[in-house]
Image: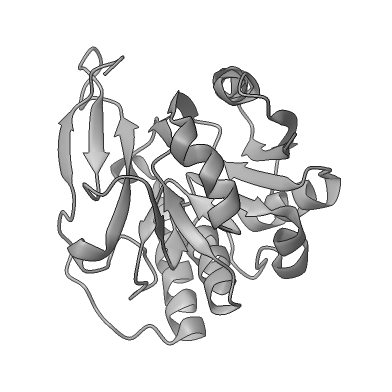
Length: 239
């Protein structure tokens, strides 16, 4: 049986409990889950490192408290543990900047469900690639990152990254350049109850600062214009 420690930085018990309940889709498939909430973390990197130190699983899941597991496709999900050392649900095949999304559109991978534009509107699905299955990647989105515990203990999260942004590209890209197999799986569909346009000014300021740090750290020199690199479709529950 695969043992998994699920590490989440949170200050919202209601959100956390809802997220935790949705992971029953995974435990029902025979995975042994350990939940590790980190309250009042000063940054995502310090919180995740604290979770690493407390964890006992063979695999560690780093995820937000505002997600919900909607579906599990076992034929892809179980294979991801065999194919990859680190994997997520969204990312890029070729990391070209300090934001995984700022890659050539053909390099993007994954999909995620988001809330409708207004209250009462139906959920939507952001599709970054039509590709199905499991795919090699160089960098991942931090909404969900699964990592072998041994790798997380070796590389850890870079605590010079302040706040709650850019920890994902730093960790996943370092895993890639250290020779570990990083990938995106189509085996799990998540809903993420968050949007960039809802970031407050402090988070946006931290994001811009961290992106500059990441660009210098990894010598990312390519500049991308803002723009939509995915398509959005209605999400129908049960389909």
